[in-house]
Image (cartoon, rainbow, N blue to C red; front, top):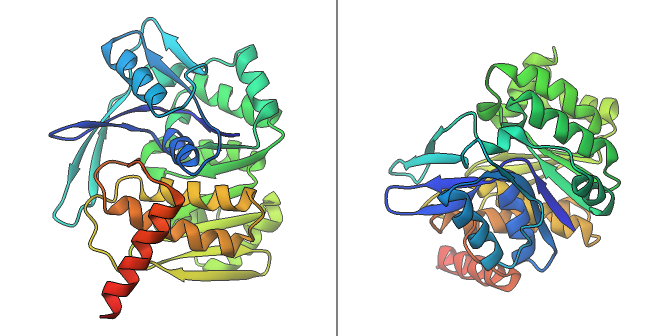
Length: 300
């Protein structure tokens, strides 16, 4: 069971809205790949919340861990894409997922989870951050943190330092790991040196770094592996990092090594970039077929 803990919300485009929120995206992708994905979040007692719950249920996921807030509304993010398919975001504040409660149900879920994926957005509020950290403390499975400095705002350093001791696998972008180097006082170090320090200091199993259209890097103790990104012309890069995280985690839980899992994760990210919205319906075979056709057309 892979739990997406934190925010679930609507990604709102000009023409349509899609289920969003990084932890929720990972749980949805895990479900598409044949695992049990669970979203643990909080929605409003409003029309958007009801529609979100129905949509999640229609995708085959349980809504048992979607708390209902009677005072705060369901979270939304307005997305605008540039000509390269790169999104900009306007995220509303003081919404339901900012008020996550640690309930007995959450405690039971923490004990059952094979892995939990969480980020920084839901930790912008004291209440949800306390709930998330308590869940991580109780969780016996893998704990995966997807750093998102953009959503953490001014509290990034505080959020980071509180969460890192509970992390087993760290997922970051290039900008985010550079910011981490600054706030953790390792500015000017080589990236490999900093990664080795993080792994030693926090006892991470590994670190996954995504660098957009260039490549991804997986750092393990005293070594690293680079996988080039696939040559595509993206339609929408929203959620590509979440797809990468899901592919990486699912294959790692199935016994693959970190670099083997990284190979499939790169395919997942490329597939999602060729569709609108962060969680297009997919299967593992569909991803593999898409990549095969991409490689063939690129070689012609």
